[in-house]
Image 1 (cartoon, rainbow, N blue to C red):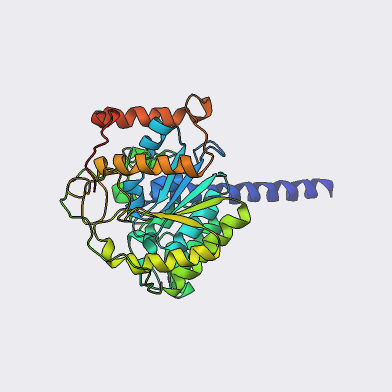
Image 2: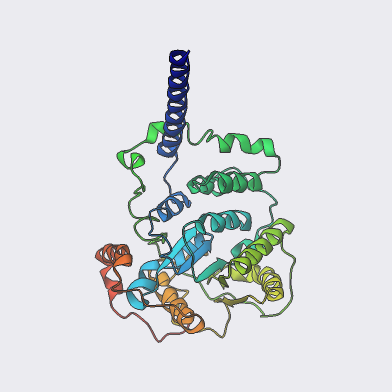
Length: 353
């Protein structure tokens, strides 16, 4: 009798071990097959490798923010330990779940929230880059939550939750880096703490508009989730600052931003709209943009110097340079300046925008 019980126990132990091994194998295989692109996947995954509670400023938002907020400038010139969790066309519902996931390992002093999603009119996310960005969220609850928020019907999310078809068709494009954790996509979004550079130069003029207080209602779902973000930050005791990224195409965004600022005011949350005509900090629309709305490398340095100065004035942010916990920031900065040595010099111009 005792022998039979022992055999039964051994059987169940082997079964449990087999099941656990199978689950771990599936999880790892899904990770390997997840596309490691610039749409936010690598930035999110690499956050898990960041030392716990080492990010003081967490930026969340669209590609305007990941191309404009230069984490290397913030670190090397001001000692601000920042990280960009931004992705292409990121709506506020993806921002919300991204923040929820980040707070599992980080306790930032300040969250910077890109205002751009205030102008988005769609109720749900079309299949493409936006929903792909959720693949970087490894926490199952927040990943499923983000995916469900992206689609109109829950059944539409099943394919994404299972990683179909993007994950299961990625085997043809696998490289050695896909098997590593954290992933390395050539530095973009990974080695530079979520900053993704744009090298091109596109000539523009400063937006021409009458600066008014007229508001245009935001999309209902964007408003719902930005309110969730405000309430989450307050519940966690984290300062939040709205950021209006400089944008040559801003004239069409202005009234939506007014509505967002009004909602933020209900929560006592402040913001800085860097499109305001009274703000002059050396940004040149003729040379500092890569396209119709994204800052290029030069523009990101100029803008980030102004942003860092404002952050230091508004918040009690320590200078982390020289702290061994932040050694990875020195590595990132060294890599950045090796590729862009000109920006190690003071390039602040006296020409206004």
